[in-house]
Amino acid sequence: MAGNRTRRAILASRKPGPYSLDMETSGFLSVVVSVGSCRTGRAILAIGLVAMLVGCASRGRAPQSPVSIPAQPTDEGKPSARSSPEGVHHVVQRGQTLWRIAHTYGVGLDALARVNGITDPTRLEVGRRLFIPGATTVREVPLAAPAGVAARLTWPVRGGALMSRFGVPRGGNRRHTGIDIDGETGDPVLAAHDGRVVYSGSSGDYGKTVIVEHKAELRTLYAHNAVLLVREGERVKRGQHIARVGRTGNASGDHCHFEVRRKNVPVDPMPYFARNDEATQ
Image 1 (tube, rainbow, N blue to C red):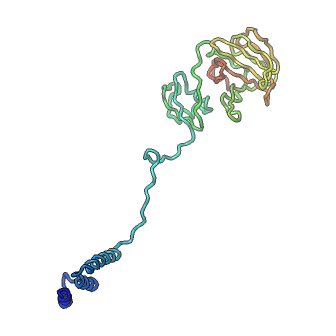
Image 2 (image 1 turned 30 degrees about the horizontal axis):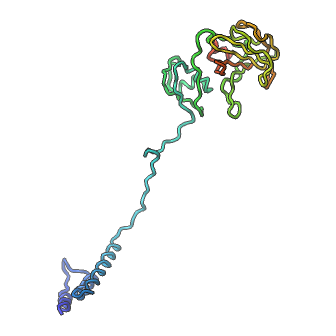
Image 3 (image 1 turned 90 degrees about the vertical axis):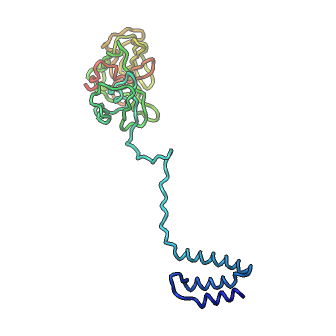
C-alpha cells in the first residue's frame, strides 16, 4: 500500500539537518502516516496531535509566580484614609466668637487659635470650619448677647473663682446647665442686674433658690443658698444682696450655682458678663 511505501521512504531518509525531527516526533509522524489513509487513522491522528501539543506545552511552561491581589478600594473607589486625631469640625455662625466657641467646648482660647492657624482671635469669618480638638460631638454655641442688660451682668459672688463651666458632662446624657462659683458660707450673693424676683424658695436639687427676671426675655438663677434675702415680686437692683452662699440641695460644698436662661432655656452665662476675666478673680 502507499502508506507502507511512504513509511519506508521516511525511515530510509532520516538524516540530520536543519529541519530534521527528533526521534519522538519522527516516530509519531511515521505512525500517523501509516494510519492516515483510513478513517480510523484520521481519528488517531487527531488524538495524537493533541497529546503531543499538550506534552510540549507542559515541558516548556515556565513556573508561575504567585498572583498578587490588589487591595480592595473603599467606598466610591477611593483609598481609605488614616484616622484623624480626635475632634470635630464646628462651622462658625453669625454672632459667634472664638472665645464663646472655645468655652462652649471647654478648650483653651489660645489652643483653639493655634490649631486653626488664627493670629487674631477677634476676627472670625462666618462659615469658617474650625477644628475642635478633643471634642466628640458638635455643640450649639450661644450667639452674641443682645444689647442692653445681657451685655452688662455682674459677677454674683465677689472674688468667687469659677469652679465648673456650662455644658460640662454630669453623667449619662446630662450636662451642667450653668456655672459654679466658689464662695464661703454666708458670702453675699449679688443680683446680676436690675429685675424682678419671680421665685424665692426651695427647689429640689437646687436647694434654696432665687430667680430674677430681667429685660430681653432673660432670667438669672442663683442656687444652693444658705439664706434667701428677697421675696417673690420684689424689685431688685444690680449688685443688691439677694441671698447668702451655702450648700443646700444637691451640693458637695459651699458655692453659688448660677444660670442664665434666655426664653427660659439655659445658655452659657460667660458671654453675658461685663468683663469675662471676672471669672478668674
